[in-house]
Image (cartoon, rainbow, N blue to C red; front, side, top):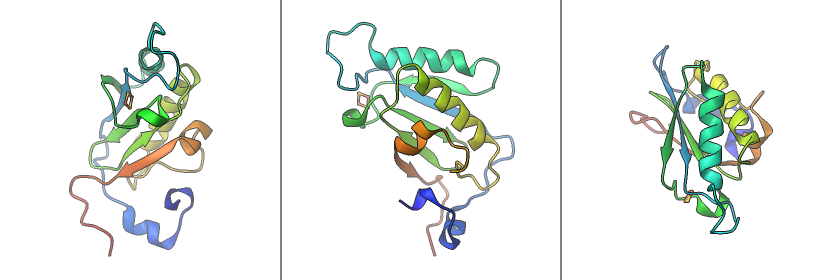
Length: 142
Ligand code: FES
């Protein structure tokens, strides 16, 4: 996976996010991660609540969302930053996943190239990486 290492071609992926751009974590509140359909509270809701609590005082916004089309690998969340790449993660744990998301978001917030650094990224966000999508104005690879 190209996201696992820094290469010469990775420099083509960089962008120039706003220096004080916002980070938003969207947590799927309908994910069950293979758990019983009648389980209450819904595991995705547990993850969303834990993530919001972990984000307190960080300036990171946490928003609920109903399905990220990653149902087979739930629990799921997307981390986006204005002017930068957006990351979708899956296989998140309802409680420890929250800390991983916040740690990853903090790394991402300070990345000058608009990419979430691999080094220092929590293991859950390495193993759980599903996809990344480019910023709106990304011109494509040369
Ligand atoms: S229900 Fe969570 S990604 Fe679809």
